[in-house]
Image (cartoon, rainbow, N blue to C red; front, side, top):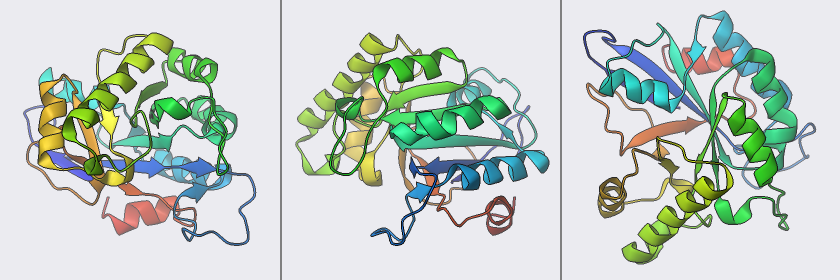
Length: 242
């Protein structure tokens, strides 16, 4: 989650939590190499959403945020953004029903080479599921890259090609999205990478982890805070002084 504070005539001093989730399972394993930082249950996710809604927070999309700044659209008093990384199958089978139940807006960042695939570590939802969620009007399917790699370790021209290719695959399989949003795998990037994507029409770049207090938003550098399975909705609010 990141805290984005910006000022304009209609949205003065608005603080926006940005939540980040990954894989989901109904039953947690006894142990996890990442100490349960990147795996959640539907129960824990629904608890987070239910508590935030009860406290008056309202989910918005990145497009809502973008329009608030570029077109001076008004935001709700307590907006927050929900994101999911990687395109795991559980995001469709376990979480999409909760999204529909609460009628909330979310963003899912998919690795286009993994869509519909199964690896030794995970299974990913397919293009049919992606189209279904996108067409609901609740889910924005966006790019997490063509591959899930540390993009700051490859030549920048290759990086540009892969990211633009991922957006072409999204356009081909889901349909044109007028706002192009990219989330860096592992949050690894540098300024040259951010600049080249901005020059090539990427509207919003979601970078690393951290807390941001900004007078004006830099859409090429939006950070998030990962939400581990044991973090409650009350902790999200209390830990960040929301």
